[in-house]
Each structure stands twice: as C-alpha cells, then as structure tokens.
Length: 81
Image 1 (cartoon, one colour):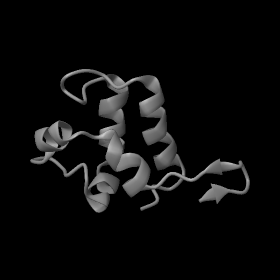
Image 2 (cartoon, rainbow, N blue to C red; image 1 turned 135 degrees about the horizontal axis):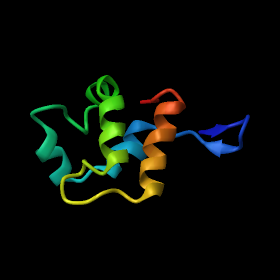
Image 3 (cartoon, rainbow, N blue to C red; image 1 turned 45 degrees about the vertical axis):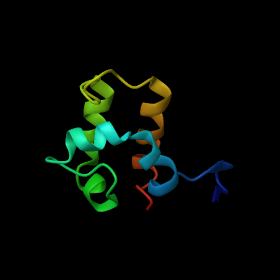
Image 4 (cartoon, one colour; image 1 turned 90 degrees about the vertical axis):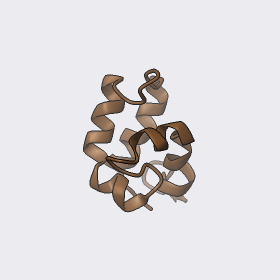
C-alpha cells in the first residue's frame, strides 16, 4: 500500500519484516520470542530493535544499516501486520 502523505510504500510484517530474519535467526531466538510471529515480534519489538541496532542480533554478525532502518521504520509506522 502507498502512504499518500509520503508517497512511500507502507511496510507490513508478512511481506517486509519476516523476510529480514533467516531460519537460523528464528531458531536461535525461539526460546525468547518467535521472529516469524507477528504478535510476538510486536510484543518484543523494542528489544529486537535494540539488539539489531547494537549488533547483538543476529548472533553471527550485525545487520547492514539499511536493514535496521527497515525494521525501525516499520515500528515507527505502527507495526502493521
């Protein structure tokens, strides 16, 4: 969907956020939260964002800044499903 105020596509969990996380990431974190479950990610979004911004997550290397920006923007836009 296009945001008429900014002319940019709105971000959604299923199409934009879930693909950021690999099977490995999900399996590594599943005891804390499920990275492919919308309600679980929303409930832990601040901790997840903090971890990816600091480079603590994923455990095998930091995300590029553009990938972090996608997650940050999705949260700022209201974490749409």
